[in-house]
Amino acid sequence: MKFTFEDIKKDPKIHTYISMADKSLASLGYTEHSFGHVGIVAKNAGYILETLGYPADEIELAKIAGYMHDIGNIVNRVNHSQSGAIIALRLLDNLGMDAADASEIVMAIGNHDEGTGTPVSSIAAALIIADKADVRRSRVRNQDESTFDIHDRVNYSVKESELKINKEHTLIKLKLSIDTHYCSVMDFFEIFMERMVMCRAAAEKLALRFKLIINEQQLM
Image 1 (cartoon, one colour):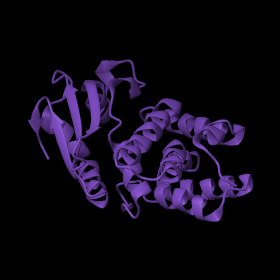
Image 2 (spheres, rainbow, N blue to C red):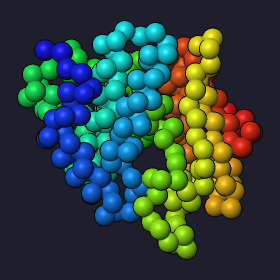
Image 3 (tube, helix red, strand yellow):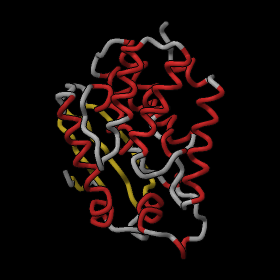
């Protein structure tokens, strides 16, 4: 049975697990990982593959993977990509999803984290880039600027963010505008360097070059 992204969004169990995973992270002081984040990741993963001309089925799978990718945080932040992959497999199998489709989603989720992941497929590559590119002020939960940690400051500094593939389909660019009152350009690059390197590898999987531009300065 074929499932669409909209089918998955309507599933009450998946909805609950995403909500509870974010609740766990909120208690630990992490930035927002709820429906705002997973919705943006799903949208951008779909955008990447659609723009590059991938089949509609793969685009739907990328969007589903984006929506479910952080579900493992309900278990623990550590190794959340692997635990999330197992949870996703159980949920999708119980829904009756085709084994090949479920496998693609699980493979992408299990490889999206920069600590252990690798862009093993086009869907995984799209998920990696979409996830790491979601840096924005509205993800910061802490409203007391005096207690911001480095991740709060970096996310809060981002005023505008744009992820775009050029018309020749040779380049994917993450363009950020940041308020240097909260963090410097080099602070951002230092904190997110490992993620950006992973984005570069993911872009290469999709036959693209990756560029990171902050305040009109190209850093990668």
